[in-house]
Length: 227
Ligand code: CA
Image (cartoon, rainbow, N blue to C red; front, side, top):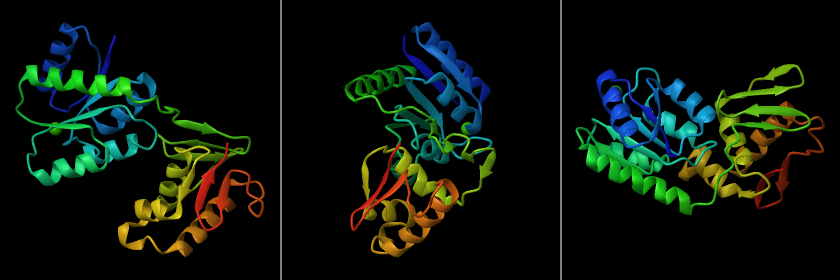
């Protein structure tokens, strides 16, 4: 059975979606804000997410960005905003499709079928929101890191870097990609930023920062997270 997570703060629309989807034999969970949506996405592992952009707590764009830190579940955005800038932004951060309200239920169902079909052809991604090593634990949903009995405080930049490396375990991530994703396209030659921030991350997470076991440098190329 296909499991759909409906993220919509308008109670009437949420109810209509739930009823229509259940009538078509979908298994449906509904969240009315962004934080609950991220929790449900991690716990229920939906096959597809229907996401409203205007939510009471976090913006839907931020929900997609955070979700994409650890999940490749298809995201179909439902929004009253119909400017193309919003669409491009939603797609850029990782949404799969976009529908402008009001929409017809038939069209929604067709797009939903297309999104779940695409998913079946994509190899499964690691859906592990919590990454555990011998020395530290990183929870990508709660954005928390612990070393032994202590919480590790990371800055947003450190998080962003760590998130990219951890979601590509064992894979070499190029300096250029890290710089572009964390600092922006115009900063792709600032490799000294990476050296500074990687040193900070190692100090905070590695047992022996001078001889890192998890956050590995590939000289002149990039970095790798080893588990
Ligand atoms: Ca809304």
